[in-house]
Length: 356
Image 1 (cartoon, rainbow, N blue to C red):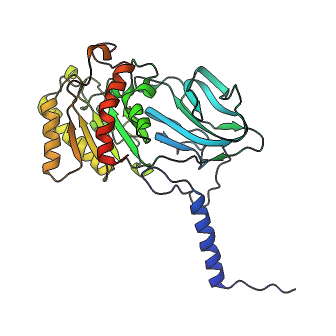
Image 2: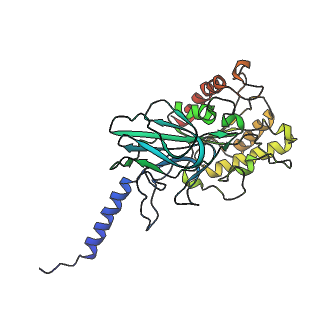
Image 3: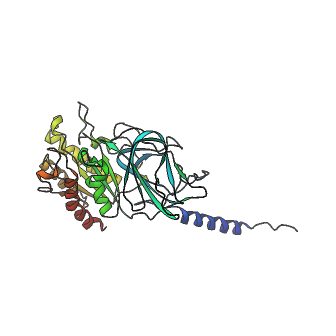
């Protein structure tokens, strides 16, 4: 039998149909457009770096290596759905991490490496979800925080679980990292607010950080906010990877100890507000009064200047009285109770603006 050539019109229709099917199968990124595979690139195997069903939240380096993804800043995590009864993590070298299966308790894995069994008690067969984050100390990951992939049951696969519709970014120092709280980033107010509001959450925070970069080595987030790595000048972070619906800034606690003048601080705060606005044109920006009451007039003035310049989606948050003496582990850092107290006050303020 003689074959019948396809007409150009029929070919175009088939191509359009295939494109639509592929687009429908790709997951949506919170606050952004659907994730798309690069032309000519074959999707990774289920559970491996590059698997489109795995959502990496926060600032992850996914371009330096196709076999190992590295998180930066505090509180980065990944989420994925999987079938079967077991899931294991391929961990290159020693690291501390937290893992949660479905809505069960979060489990701590101390100094693990190699193939780490995350289901020592296997759940029933079916669809499950996994969330993993690596432990941080002062905003830096302790050990080898590198994702090399998952090991699934024979015949099992991954899927994209339902994704939150909003994303909140928290910018700050060791208080935002969650230093001295029981689970660091997981028990910090940013993580708590995000979970409470059903939103994805990022903690662009570093222990000891200032707003202003200083000559004696304080990391300045006015400069580093736009970077992938808090401790490197390159590369820049690609803000098209996700878009925040709200950004909470809590900076100024450490600048006093590094001799930053009030004039320099106010100018730098205004610069950071402009950088955040350029990165996230639609986000509501919340400038928190530091819990120790430092640089309060300068923070307020920077917000007022931004509003006067036409930015109507930025506001100062008065935190006076949010924390009591029983809410601190020392004179600076909130304990678990303190972080919950902050979340109690902050969550409704954010929700009122972004509608979570």
